[in-house]
Image 1 (tube, rainbow, N blue to C red):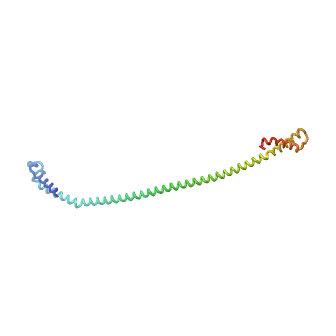
Image 2 (image 1 turned 90 degrees about the vertical axis):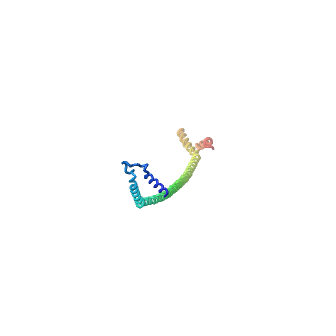
Image 3 (image 1 turned 90 degrees about the horizontal axis):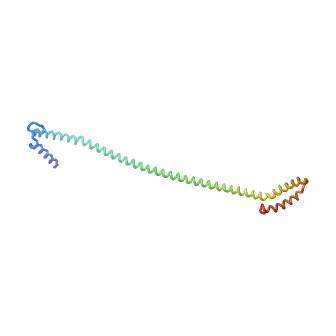
Length: 196
């Protein structure tokens, strides 16, 4: 209030000083002191009306619009924060779902791997058992052949000798005498070949 009175007094003193504004001989009518009172009246009236119109009509609408905008902005901010919280919750839920899926996939992979290894090991054991059985069977056949080989060789030798002697002499020879000779030779030579 004091500032307002001070500025008004300075303003009026400035306009009423005749030494500062001397417009007696023609010149600008605004600077002529006889028109100053009417100019101040109309200036005060114009600015007073303008002040009343602005303060009573325009400024309340502007302040109402500003308040409305402020409330809308606040609502938008709250909605955005709610959306952000919801999206963060959904993102966390998605991350948990992805992590859970990865763990499930890893467990499924490990189970399948263990099952495949067990299956492979069981088949390998079965195959090793079958191979061992085949090897044992083959060894039995070989040992049986080794045991029966001298008898077959003696039989073949006796038949061959009988045929040779028959062709050489031209007469039938007794198989028992040839058999005794072949047995005697096979015993001598068999000890070398068969470890007897």
